Image (cartoon, rainbow, N blue to C red; front, side):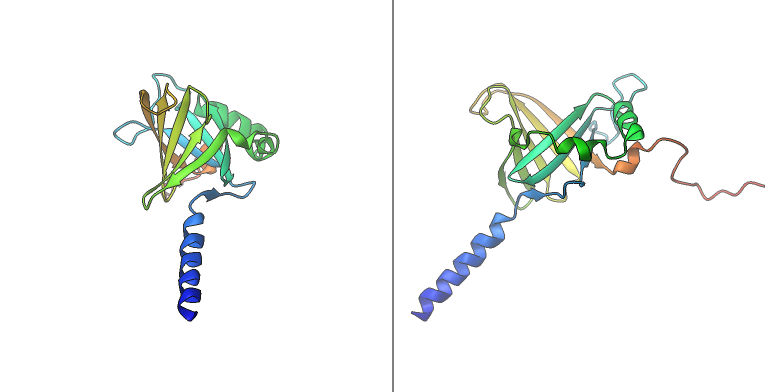
Length: 171
């Protein structure tokens, strides 16, 4: 009888530890990702507006996302209202992003589950890297593109003078 209890306890611990693989963000914990190329530099698309930005927030199984074409668009929104994405998250549909699975190195979410044109997002466990896979088929057999993003802090989008002084003194 004691062996059965011990077995059930071990099974419960294993199940409980495996369940917390999804991302649980607070309502004001918005994650910003900027498109990058193979060299680790941000793509500029040949213009001065900057890179594409993917912005996310997760409540566990579900998530919400925003896509901005340019860094300047994010700077403008945050310049007008520093809580723009936090406030906007309150009215967004979190059912469009669904948790799929996780491994020891990545966590996977799907955007637009059940639709023919959808994406898979694979996040590194530390959430610093995001790889986006585009598919044009239900069974994930028709991969049409792979895009890599790098996480940046919200302060990256601040307007005004540099927040990183060089340490040089001028007289």
